[in-house]
Picture (cartoon, rainbow, N blue to C red):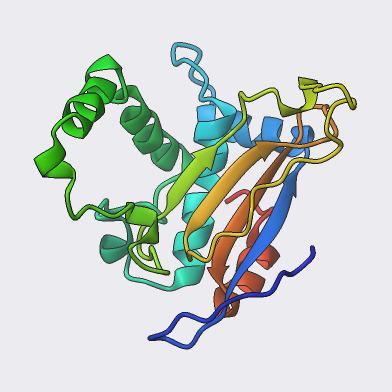
Amino acid sequence: MARQPKPKHPELQYTIVMERAHFPSAFLEKLKSKVSGDNPCHRPYTTFECLTAHLWRKITRVRNLEEELTTKVKGLLSKPVRHAARLIHDAVAQVDGDYFRSFIDFSSSKEKMEGLVPSAYGGDVLSPDLEVSSWLNIPFYDMDFGTNPPRLFVPSYERVEGFLHIVPSFSGNGDVDAFVSLFEKDMRSFIDGLYYLD
């Protein structure tokens, strides 16, 4: 995993690093099976829901924050990963036409827009929160602008602790890459425990 030049968080003097975590399709299938369980009546969770739930729990653990403070949802670490996936599923289900219309209505009001700054750039640290960007359904490797499809697509480095980018792997076989930004002091523990399904 290559490391890039990292800025320091001004208040805490910790370096923010971004690492790529690679998830083979076989790992993702095991994770999805564990999350969905043996309940045949329930719709299986998506790769996004399962992987985000897994990453959320791992990041919560290495940040070493009290459970209630970190998630405002008790039981994230003490309950199975299925619990985190359900929370994510329910939140995604709320993103519908009305949700997007509210953005359009809000943006059409100039007085409300004055003084706003993008939330991700309001500071270098999102902890105890996360911001997740999923590009799993964007066909990057099918695009061809006359010079053949790209060989590799990666997000640019974001100087924000707690940013996650989930992208399809360039292998094209169902693998997924997650680019995770955390404090350097937390990253080694995160990577060391990343592939354990607990």
